[in-house]
Amino acid sequence: MAEKDSKDTSRRSFLHDGLWGISMAALGSLAGFAFSRTAKEKTVWQIDPYKCTCCGKCTTECVLALSAVKCVHVYAMCGYCELCTGYFDPDPHELDTGAENQLCPTGAIIRTFIEDPYYSYAIDEDLCNGCGKCVKGCNAFGNGSLFLQIRHNLCVNCNKCAIAAACPSQAIKKVPADEPYILKQVG
Image 1 (cartoon, one colour):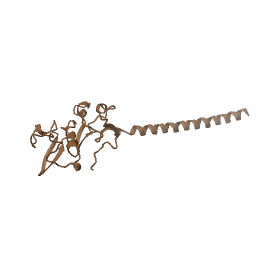
Image 2 (cartoon, helix red, strand yellow):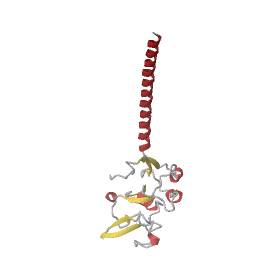
Image 3 (tube, rainbow, N blue to C red):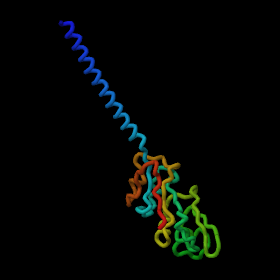
Image 4 (spheres, one colour):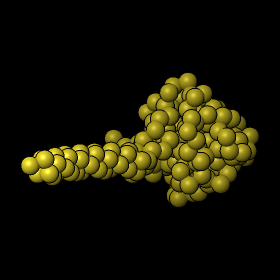
């Protein structure tokens, strides 16, 4: 009889230990799944164009030699004006493309004649230093078709972005990598 009780106890222990092991494995799998979901959910830094004040910190605070922040042009919003306040100094000496009349310190905005009185404006991102002078001019007197954006092919995605830490308007934030750009909308 003692032998039978010993078998029952060992069967009971086996079932108890087996169920405990299965439940621990399930819990471990669940924890692993939850961790893998959060690990896959990557984020990137981005500027909210509606909060940005074009303070100039994007140029000076980025850890890169040439900032990962670039000016972007929403062509659908642009008026193609002869006197573009994102291109020209608001009080130009005359409407010529001389450097003394341009807002951009690096010559990153390319102005092309379309037909009188319309011009197209394009950004040479290789020259753009992200200073925001053109954006500030466009927002002050124009239609706001220029705005700053962090280019993710250039950004090293610092754990704590130096520009975000220095941004006085708190316009830089982490966004999901699958929706990396906050764009200005027409209208």
